[in-house]
Length: 225
Image 1 (cartoon, rainbow, N blue to C red):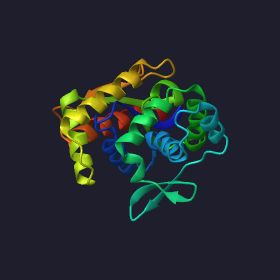
Image 2: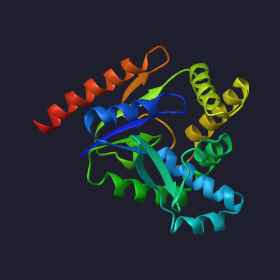
Image 3: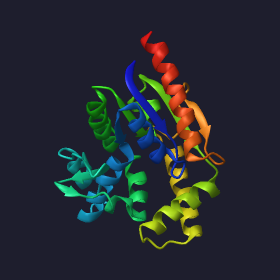
Image 4: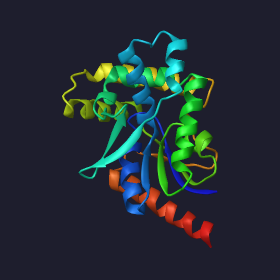
């Protein structure tokens, strides 16, 4: 086992915010693996390579993404550029899901993610952290919520960032992404067999974080005893 906590789940389940808070409480680093796929999707879109697999696969050879902390907030950098806001646009999110179905893309991300996690003490958030990338993690979680709740959370998040999108469009986007993520041949979105599944639909953020934190502490005591 390695000292890694994995938190997987679909868009809008609350895993990003919960993961950040858990990492802070534990004194671990936070690994936003979804941002890595989004970063690659952004570069592919900017270069106009989204429909040319041979071209975007070549980009993978030198693709790197870096996380830096600025004013207590984690920022995402690629090619020495801060792309934190740019990767949250709806079209980037959709292409990140589309590209994540490709074996070459997942293989490159796997290498980068394992490298980041090799020293342990990280909270890895994503869609296949517990099932593929960190199968040897000592604590695994899978967060979920109803489609309606997840869509409203995402809609409010976009609205706060000045992105105008109707709630119905957000629902449609999430449904499409759920379909892509759960039915892809490679590393489909699903809970790890040993993950604690938490439905966040009716829970406050504090309740979610408390459940995860208490479980992690218990597992740490057993693992290190």
